[in-house]
Image (cartoon, rainbow, N blue to C red; front, side, top):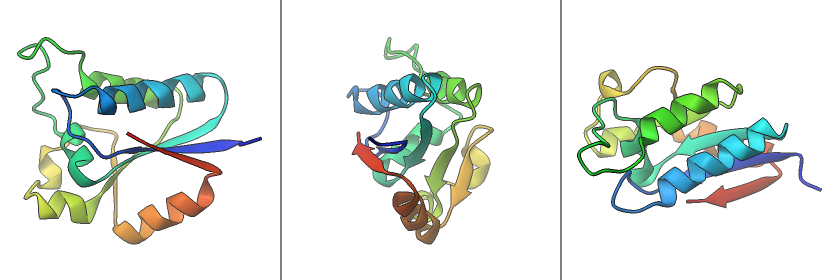
Length: 118
């Protein structure tokens, strides 16, 4: 049986429900005691922006869903190279996220028993 899960968020927020669903899965696993981490990569790094306005699109806030993970010590990582490729400076991210190089992302993959992608 798996004892740890890494949730990959690869989709941008809003318009699709994948990113929000991944964040909620991570919360459910963490609440139930499973070691869980979240990694935002590819277009998933847009979920890390502090300027989200979910009310405009009448969707739940991915930023708030991410911040709920902090209450259960679920770390949320963002791949630095994917931010740079999209021209997103770290100063535009909301608090609590851990920006890591792609090499650290590979390490995270090896440290978890199960990886799921959203």
